Length: 110
Image (cartoon, helix red, strand yellow):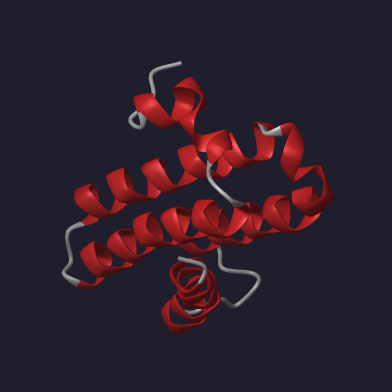
């Protein structure tokens, strides 16, 4: 598999705390939302693909087993929002709100 985040895929992702991982995922989702708002579907898709890559790295980390269900459900809902029928009725604001809590908590821990 070809990774966009090569350093993270090589093992650095597992060194980050769960909060840092979720904040990084949130950054990519924010980029995807921003590009979508600017009507640039190509850049939005690329940002979203990078977010999925990070989500999948989190799911493959044995340390995330306790949170596996939440992360897998979040992945399902966000894929549905960007490329599905939005059956979960997500909004741009709800995704920004979801990830903002992780970003705040990750920054607070420094």
